Image 1 (cartoon, one colour):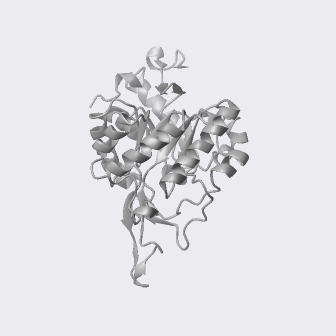
Image 2 (tube, rainbow, N blue to C red):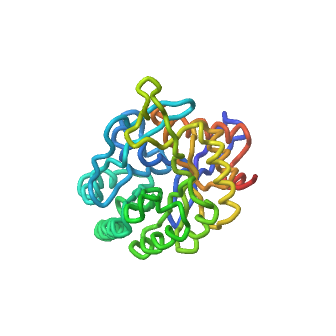
Image 3 (cartoon, rainbow, N blue to C red):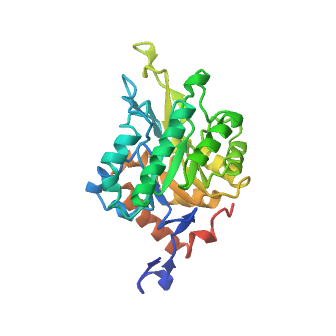
Length: 319
């Protein structure tokens, strides 16, 4: 709860808190996976404890070196990335990064990916085992990234077909008692059906959307800029699509939605809340503004004061 002094319009008292599966977010601004590391780097620019939460760098069971060649390319109103989930692996994260996460006063979310069904489950089991040992002092929630390619099924992402994703969500749900959000791909055959399936299989929330597949061609070299041909498009360019999908999903499910996709202003946050999101994640904007979290929260509070909004619950899902 944040109280605005007598000099503020209406002496307004603002409530920015939201609860998901028993986890309290002090405000709706969460940093998106892959854009904020584990928080240390940005802590040099502002107090990351101001944030509602941090979704850490995407992890896989085993360490990954990531893709070769160009990894990031700026495009109109956004960026393309082909990082390839470079990460130290779940065990190394738990051993080396969690000590820092234990010092944070914000919601800490592990983003878990994988290329096989077995790797996902084993990763979730490791995280759960560590949470049991620490008493959940370092990890509050798992965000299951089902946009990863299933190497045993010819590379098609787990999150494309609802029938394929169902088995994975069910198994990970059984492997962990931690609150579980499933991060959905915009390339799903039907993203609302996918979200409904996640609810049916015991997910506590859904996160959407992940990046949209895109391409950039170097016309002088006559080839794709990226070794993998395609890359993930993020940033303001995808916001209208993300907002539409959040709205569609909000009409189908009862579990909370973590909305994301091109957020770079307080009014963007308000739009996602009005579309039905419980909290939001901010990604590409972190590369444009190193103090993005701090500035967005300041502007969000000011907007709420100007519009006489005391609690985000007043406008959540209003559209």
